[in-house]
Each structure stands twice: as C-alpha cells, then as structure tokens.
Image (cartoon, rainbow, N blue to C red; front, top):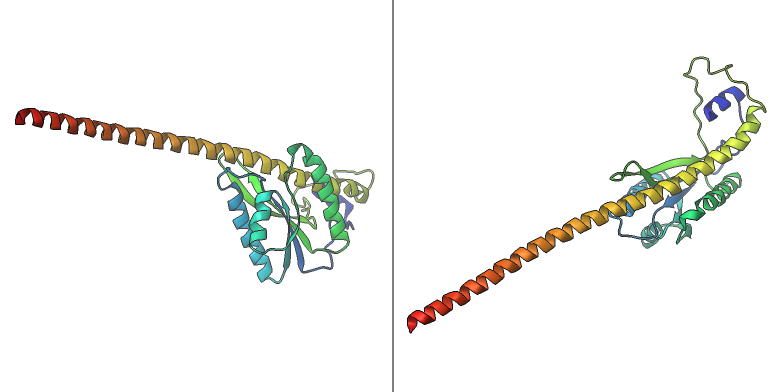
Length: 237
C-alpha cells in the first residue's frame, strides 16, 4: 500500500524518507531477553549484531547501541561498546507504549540529525525451533514503489493527497515494525526456553538412567564378591 501511495504521489518530502546530513553515526536498537535459560537465543543474536557493527565500523561509521533487555546490554557493555541507553525488566504488556516512545525518540533523533540511520536488531520468529537474527534498517525508511505491476498508476485515487496520507501511514508503519520486533522477541524467547528446557529434561533423564545402570552394576558386583568370599571360606573349612 505504501509503495502505491508513493508512486501515485510522485516526489514526496517526508522526514522519515529523507536521508540526513549526518553520514557517520549509526544507531542500533537491540532487542534481547532479560532472563537466560533459553539456549542460544541471545548469544546468537549478539554475535551476529557484533559482526554487523564491526562491518559498519570498518566502513568508518560510529555505532551506538540502544539496548532493550539485560542480556544484550551485558554483552555489549562488557565488550566496551558505546551504550546509548538501556531499558531493562520489560513487561510485555507495555510493548505498545514502548513502541510509541521509541518511535517518537527515533523520529526526533532523525530530524535533529543525530544519526545517519537506525538498525533494528532482533530474533525474527520463524518457528518454535528456529529464530533468525534480523538486522534491518528502519530509518530512514525505504519504500519500494510497485512499478512492476501493470496498471498500478492511475488505478488508485487517493484523498487526501499522498503527502498527507504518508504523513499518517509512515509513523504508524514505524511503530508497527518496532512493535513486531518486541512481539517476535518475546515469542522467540519463550519458544527457545521451552526447547532448551525440554532438551535439559531429556538430558537429565538420560543421566539418571545411566547412573541407575552404573549403580545396579556396582551393587551386583559387590554382592557377587561377597558370595565368592562366603563360598571360598566354606570350602576352606
């Protein structure tokens, strides 16, 4: 829909679509969990993001990290990265408010030329067994117009004009992408924790079975030894 509006509106001048004059500063918004015991859910993402940050730094960029969740903050603070701010002990019921606050903060930062781009890093939920690290640019927003669709131009009439529509849709789109990141992080964390605990339960069961077998073998060997000693003593008499 946004692509069709942009195509219909022609040249659109909106702060969320404008490349800022700042060409060096990059802000990474990192979403991890506050708690552990969820396998490699946080470590995989942090390693991937760290590699992406090093690539940006090698290109001459200055990177700051805005952390949501204790695990991400701990990983990057311990390695000497520049932590702009951190939000910890997050209640999932506050995701809508956090998304609104973060979106407003990012828009203000973009307009005031505080950074050249914003990357959103989180674990994209694929399935219970799979969560893929994501490192997407969310500001300035990039919208692909649907030029490849026949009749895309002229088939739609927008009222009010495209500028006014985009003025409403673009901030909502940004908030939605941030909210999606929070939700997928929460879903992936719980799925990864369930998988990790299930694996730990199976491993504990295997250890118990092995220890029980070893105990029974040792007990049987002790009984056999005692019987041999009794028989040997009786024969000696």
